[in-house]
Structure formats: structure tokens, C-alpha cells
Amino acid sequence: MAGLEDLYREIILDHYRNPRNRGELECPPAHRSEGFNPLCGDEVVLTFEMDGDTVTDLRVGGQGCSISQASASMMSSAVIGKSTDEIRDLTRAFKAMMSIHEESIGGDGSEALDGASDAAGANDGTLRLGDLEALRGVVKFPVRIKCATLGWNALATGLDETVGAS
Amino acid sequence: MSARVSPEIDGAVKSQFPLLERSVHGRPIVYLDSAASSQKPAAVLDAMDDYYRTVNANVHRGAYEIAAAATELMEAARADVARFISAPSADEIVFTKNATEAMNLVARSWGGSNLGPADAIVLTEMEHHANIVPWHILAAERGCEIRWIPITHDGCLDLTDLDRLLDGAKLLSVTAMSNVLGTLNPIPRLAAAAHDAGALLSVDASQYVPHLPTDVGALGADFMVFTGHKMCGPTGVGVLWARMELLDAMPPFLGGGEMILDVTKEGFRPNTVPHKFEAGTPPIAEIVGLGAAVRYLEGLGMDAVRAHEVSLTGYALRTLTDRHGDDITVHGPSEPAQRGGVLSFVYRDVHPHDISQVLDQSGVCVRAGHHCAKPLMRCLGVTATTRASLYVYNDTSDIDSLAEALDEVGALFGR
Ligand SMILES: Cc1ncc(COP(=O)(O)O)c(C=O)c1O
Image (cartoon, rainbow over all chains, first blue to last red; front, top):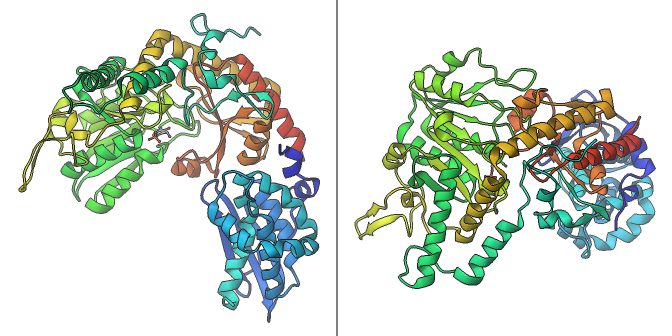
């Protein structure tokens, strides 16, 4: 039985209470991407600056539940200074961690499929995810997975639009 | 504090709802989401079970014993529902899938044959999407205009400009009770204003019929819709009531079996009302279940149901405020007599999703989200609310559990 402590880990609450890289960069030169969860109204607005292939700065705006906002905050700390390829790898590892395993119930089937195809990446992902690991417990609360992945999906879309899908 | 709120409705009611015996996360369930869907009493479950075990056959088309019995049961339920809302005739009761389908029927059938580019429909800012989107669809198709009655800061309709909004309108469609704010709207007054302006009144009574004694004549409605699963009945059945002249003049909604008198290669002749609007095999067991739900509520007495909820709503408002003070704000009218037992609240600055997640660990079921009322959310300046809603089986212990569980929310998210 999943307990609340699996979901609301201290580091998550810390990012929720003290969000990192909060705000907005001027566009242009920054790029902008939004994520919106129509089900619960969670909203993440990302603005980020690129230098060549590297995300040099990123700010998080928007509003929503602790999981969506903390996850976006943790993501911002993890991706600034990284190349688009590194960020895509990280995104894949994070989404694999967020995939519903067979014993879990409910949730979004398509998300589960996405993750399952990346299951191999989950293990080496563990090594690199660092603080993001704290979000692992979200998987036990399937309705909240969409909250945790909101910022990551917005970033993936934003990078694709900026650099072009590869 | 005594656990008894009204002399008529007491703890015995709770024990008539089998689901309420279960626990959640090892705690007794505290069900506070009846505005989304109510629990079902054993009387309803038994009626549906008996139907399937002893009567089950398709209606209207069989001469044999059990087919006739099924038809009789279904038509008896129609009479039960008519009596429950004081409809002049059971033939004015049209069974649909839910309130949403009933409102779509009104928009498609009546709206489709009565509204054109020069026409206006008046809605309010507190409507459920079920009373918005069918009109958006129609308006986009026909080019008619939608006007909106605004709400005041305390969540009531702002009727200052009512006459201007109704001027030249063909229909006013309004909720009798808000599913977010609990606000009870002045339906007889709105009916008089609409009729004075030459408009008809359609009432979304999804949150009203389950909770208050209902008399369609006294309300002054021309159309009224509601849904079985919010009134102790099963999912899968809803009701449209409308005045017979209107139903008579309206074209069919869906086509198929049951709704015809004759079909040729050239065309069809529609059946009489209400069958004209009931294409295909109806949800017979669900209709039987709805009949049982209506008789169950009549057994409690709708005056007693309303008295219980007014009293419990008052207790809830007092308890939440006493315990949580400025940390909690309840949307909507502050006077229990002017509202139903729907309590949307803001607790500190904790997001509704987080509140409902934490409450769930204590077995407390409340809903977090936009409650299918996004225009209202925008008016309130929020993206979501946390909503606790009451019904006959709730008592003061449920409110106490909610108030206590909120402490845990505070402890976890306190800044
Ligand atoms: C005010 C109101 N209208 C309409 C509906 C729609 O009911 P249903 O989904 O059963 O059609 C609801 C409930 O969700 C409601 O609260």
C-alpha cells in the first residue's frame, strides 16, 4: 500500500515551497513552451535560452499542484547547462521511471506504452537521475503521473520546435 | 455535538447504503462527493438485481408474460419519476442516458427547429459544461448568439441586467443549483422574467431534484433535465421533462427502434411522446433502479432530506471555520438556507489535487478539479477547487473527519 510519504518526499516539498529558477525570460531571445493539463488545470510555462546546442538558462512559470511544480523545478536544476542530446536522454530516463508497471492500476495507457518501450533506459537512468529519483513514488499514484511529466513534456516540445526533432 | 442532525434522517440511513460499510486505506470511508455521483441504497441495488433475476426481457415488443412485466416495471418507474417532480403526466417523462444527453436532446431537437441566426440563448456563468457545450454546438451551426448572466462576488446570479439580457432571447437555460458553489438560483423569478420576454426556460436540475422537493409547475420550467446517478439511482439513466405541447411539436432526436409508428422505404412516422424520443432498447434495469431510488427518497421525505442537508451544511460551515479559521475559505452563499450541501473551498494555498490526495489517505473522498464548470473557474480566478458535497447518508461525523483530515494537509504543506 502506497503511503503519502512515497509521494510527498521532503525534497519534493522543498522544491514546491522554494521553487528553483522560477520566473520568465524575455522572448526573444529566449524560447517559450507551455504544458497544460486540461484535467486539473496544472500549467507550466517554460522559457529557455540556447547557446548552440546547450540550454544555458531556463525559467519556470505557471501554477499547479505540488507534484507538477516541484517536478518542473527539479527539472530546471537538472537541465541547465546540458546539451539537447543530454536532455533528451534525461527525459527518456525520467519518463521510463514514470511509466506504470503492470502491477499498477489505472492511469494513461499511452504513457505506459511510451515508458515500456524505454524500459531498458530506466536502469542506467537510475544512475543519472539524482534528485529526480525522489519522484519515483509518483508511479504508485497513477493519476499524478501526468502532473510529474507535465514540465518534461513541455520542455521536449519546446526543444523539438527550437532545434528540430532529431 | 450530537451525531443526529434532524429527527427524520439519522444514522439508520447510512446503514442502508452497503458501500458505506467499506474502508479505504484502512479507514472507514467518508464519502463527500455526492455532487459527482451518489451512493446507492440496498433498495435500488435489490430492485435492479431482482429485475435481472426474475423479469429481464426487452420491453414493448413482446406479448409473453415477462416481456409484459418488464414493460410494466419500466412504465411504473416513469410514473414514479413523474410523481416525484409533480409532472402533470407520466408521458412528459423522457428517459435518456443522463442529464447531458437530455440537454443535448433539447438543444438538437427544440433548438434545432426553433433557433436561427437572429436568435439569442441566455446562459449563466455558473453552468456545468452539460448546459454550455450543446448550446455552443448549436450556436456555431445556426449562428445564434449566447449571452451570459454574470455572477456576484458571493457566487449568486447578478440579475441587474436580466431584462436587457432576455430582450429578444428565445431561451434561458440555467442550473437550479450550482454544482460548484451550491447556490440555489431563483427559478420561479427567472421563469417569470423569461416568459415576460417571450423566452422559454430550461432548467438543469441535476443538483436540485436529488436534494429538494421539486414541483415543475411551481418552478415555472418549460424543460427540465436531471440525472439518475446523483439521486441514489444507477448510472446510465437520465430524465428530460418538458411540457407536452413542446414535446409534441419537437422532432425526434435519435432514430431507430421504439421511436417509430411506421417505417417504409420512403420514410417513417414517429411514435407518440415520450417514445418518440426513446430510440432503441432503453436502459430498462437502470430505469427500474431509478424508480426504486425515487421511492426510496419519497420514503425519507424530500422535506426531511432538505432539512437534513441545510442543518448539516450549517454544521459544516461552522465546524470548518471554527477549526481552520482564516486558513479556509468556502465559495458561494454563506447562508445554508440559500444553498445546497456543496462546499467548494480553498485551504491556505494548497492545490486542490494535493488536498484531495492527502484527505484520501484518511478515507475522505472529495473532488478536486474544475467540476466541468470552466467558465465559472475563470470567474472565480482559480483553475480548480476542492469540493466536499453532502447527501442523506452524511452526518456530523463525516464533517468532523474532513475537518480533522485537513489538519494533516496543513501539517504537510505548511510553509
Ligand atoms: C449541474 C450539473 N449538470 C449536469 C451534470 C451532468 O450530469 P451527467 O454527467 O450525469 O449527464 C452534472 C453532473 O456532472 C451537474 O452537476
